[in-house]
Every structure is written in structure tokens, then in C-alpha cells.
Length: 180
Image 1: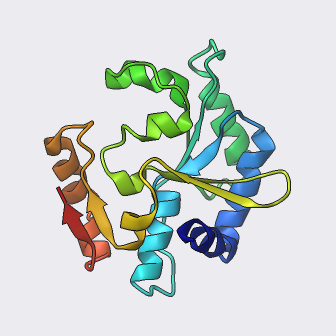
Image 2: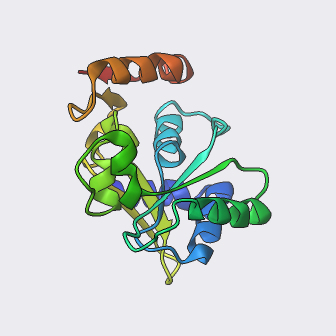
């Protein structure tokens, strides 16, 4: 299964394992490291890169509809920065993100990810209490491992195209294919 392959790739990356351990220590509900943390690792693997592509940030996503203070994420970012200051942590409660995005309320982290502009970005991983890596994806793992960047029709095509261009994905990973 592709989930097992992804878990293996993560397990072989000491930096990513350390990051997963740090996030687990926060004990946040429905919490994962998502997006480029996972996606870029697979794309690096597909391009046989021996050195991982540097991460701009680490997107930590969780789902807590009972969290009233919308600034709580700053506390979590500070905790993660204290543990691994070399990483740029971005923590967001997905229970609140529908407001910013103009969507109906999300039901879970996985549901929130299903609104992200590229299907391959809607992937995430966490380390459970048994030190097992758990991976989730709103759209499955096939297109990610096929080297695609797939438009998600829940967002505008203009946003998708802008992100593909501004993130330089096709320069960093030239074998990727855009699927609209």
C-alpha cells in the first residue's frame, strides 16, 4: 500500500521523525503535520534527490471546535519553536479555518484538507502513542506517488495556477505533471 510506502519514507528521515515527535508531545486533537512536509518528501523520492528539499515551513493542523481563543496557535508555535527552533512552525486549528476561507464549517482535519487547492497537498502524517506513523489524505495517495499536481475544484483555478507558479514546484521537481 502507498500509505505504508509513505510511512517508510518518513521513518527514514530523522528530521521528519523528530518533528513528528515534537508535534505528538503537544497532544492536540486530530493533529498532523501536513502539506509540504509529506508531499515534498514523496516528490523528492520520485526525483531520486539524495538531499531533501528544504522546507519553507511545517504546517501543523489540528481540529478542536471547543477552542475559544483564536490565538492559541501562537502558544503551540512557541512550544514547537522551543523544541526545534531550526524549523518554521505554522500551527492552525482547522475548526476555525472555514471562516477565513468562506466555507461551511469543517468536520475534521481530513475534511478541512479536502478544501486545499491541490489534491497532493491534502496529505498529512502523525506519530501515534505506539510510535507508528499514521498517514491520511483527502484524495488518496495515488496521484501524489504518480508525480501529479492536481487541481481541486473546491478552490478557484486561478488560485491553483498561481500556487503552482509561485511555489516553483515544476522547477524544483521537473518531472511533475499538472492535472486540471
